[in-house]
Image (cartoon, rainbow over all chains, first blue to last red; front, side, top):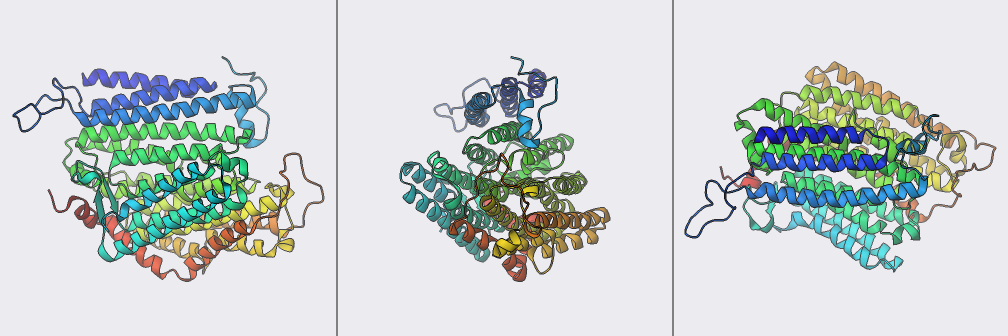
Amino acid sequence: MDFLFAILVGALVAGAVYLLLDRNLIRILFGLALLAGAANLTVFAGGRVIGLSPPVIAPGAVAASETAANALPQALVLTAIVIGMGLMIFFLTLAWRVFAAFRTLDTDALGAAETGTRPSPGTKGGNA
Amino acid sequence: MTLLPVLPVLVPLTTAVLSVALMRRSGWRTAVSVLGAALLLAAGVVLLTTVWQDGTMAVEIGSWPAPFGIVLVADPLSALMVVVTGAMGLAVAIYAIGDINGLNARHGFHAFFHLLLAGVAGGFLTGDLFNLYVWFEVSLIASFALLVCGGNKEQLAGAVKYAVLNLVATTLLLMAIGLLYGQTGTLNMADLSVRVAEVENPALLEAVALLMLLALGIKAALFPVFFWLPASYHTPPVSVTAIFSALLTKFGVYVILRLYSLVFPPEVFSLHPILTVVAVATMVAGVLGAAAQNEIRRILSFHIVSQIGYLILGLALFTPLALLGTVFYMVHNIVAKTALFLVGGIAERETGTSHLSRLGGLYRSRPRLALLFLLPALALAGLPPLSGFWAKFVLLKASLEVGSYGAALAVLAVGAVTLFSMMKIWNEVFWKAAPAEGPAADDTGARPATLAMFGAAAAVAMGTVVLGVWAEPLMTLAERTAGELINPEPYLRAVMGGRP
């Protein structure tokens, strides 16, 4: 099971890096979302959440059963998901503002702010 | 006084909430903002004196005992960083009275400013790894909002680069935290420092430590992942750039200092030599980048990167003298860089441009401003008796003692190029005659700087002089801080209370 998790996280990170290297701003956002998903799965797998019973103490017992699921990584992942959601909302709004200001989602057009030069010839508007 | 470590987080949060409530009344809002920053500074000073007299203190949030609950730990390093946060927050809050116009302030500059202060103070004081991630995110969101405060095209472009790279950094940090939790079973930093010795596969632990170093390195602007900083720091209003340079990267450096002395000391993490290489490369790359720029804020942004290299060098050498140097350098650097940004901002405001080719003659027309620039600039370059000299001298001596001659050479050479770069700004902005042609197309109109701006810049610039001439108290504090970093017994005792 851990092996499957590792393969899955690896595939997600590979996809995320591929998207993060794209020119289109929305593809970069998708890459960030995939990366966040991979991180959440890593926390999940590292915490060994897979258990057979809920993390509650049965009546009469003193501690949770041996097969109880680990509750702490679940709390960590919930926090991370909510934080990621907030950051994605910000990034989406930023992408919308960038489109409104630059009329393109091509990140090559953003480089002009840094160096004051035009983007290199041959780069047209963003490929949607 | 057991709730004292909570104050530096509570005060800025309350100020932020009040700033939102007072969004319509600019007079009250400014007063609340400055008062909140002053209270943060006062809380930090009280915390530091309490820690100095009574030793490291820890507060268990919700009274949950230590490895299970979140603790806020105030040791000399945390308390010192909170004091510096409060001081720079106060200076920039006063500067912002003149710098931030009504539009930006109505869109929440003050609220996000204090949220940033709260996030950074919380991160300095926390003793739990996941809580640290949360405080990173708080300060990140606040910094996003501050970066686009105003919304012109340059800011949007800079914000995209800043956002993408910092989001990647925090996601990698989350991954590393999850993997570390999986290996050790705890998130409490003091407990981790005990448990890492018992991990059954130390190679995996080193891999996780490296991933964490990469994530924190992006946030702290280390080589080779620092390029987001010069791409974005020069775009927002000067108050924002000043507070970013004072706090954000130093937050990352603080976390690296804390983790790589408490949780991954050289006994556990045998790759400390990597830190030496990274530090030297950061110093050199930053200063060479600065030498190539022609705009005040871009030059200073590259210098931020270069100075970060010095801080990490002290950690890489890991002797008491080297860590003393890092702590002293951190305080000196925060004060000097903030002063430079504020003075540069005044120069930009009064002339309408920040490009070196279009500035000139400010020594003749504004001699006091020239002096206020010269003092922190020479401090940054390391001239005695200013603060930078002591900081660089300690780091140089520490690297020579260890036998790290390459690092010592880098300290000296980069200091020389820093001096060249500062003199370049001095020559172009203050010394040479003003250029004959009129304002260019993208110049903002020249307006006089207000007394608030000038007063804040003057106070911080004088701070570098005070730190240099009267360096003894900070040296003593840095010595004790370095001792507690190398031997974290007081930290462990305060958090775990003697429990196994």
